[in-house]
Image 1 (cartoon, rainbow, N blue to C red):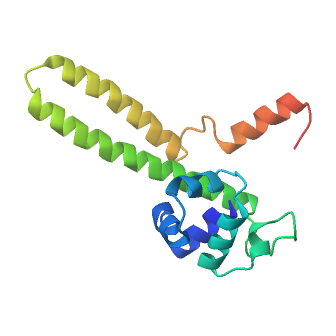
Image 2 (image 1 turned 30 degrees about the horizontal axis):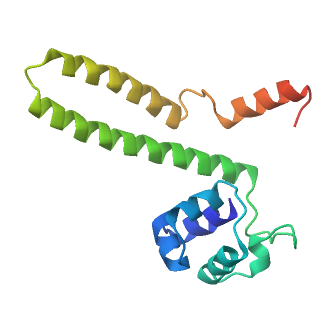
Length: 152
């Protein structure tokens, strides 16, 4: 999450960061998902972000206040990711629908299929914008607390 926060502060995409650090985009994705990067990757990222190596290795030294992700920041990042994914799906849906309607405008099944996909897209939009709180961080927390039998 530290890498994601630093990347977003600078307005870089994962691909841009990967190129600047000399690693693959998949490596950046893994690091942002919580996988521990190699020492070489840590050094490259620290160099790109112009931060001390210890900022990227919290076990060795406590994190500095400006790089710690607070709970509200985690929620906002999750919200931003959901909204981004919704818009990506929306664009994909619109382009695909346009191509299929143009190519198969005589087939009624195409209208039925895209109507179903449209309903799914609407539901995803409601979830992304927080209208429906299905599987939200709060839901995850309540599920974990129920499983643990105590508050987190």
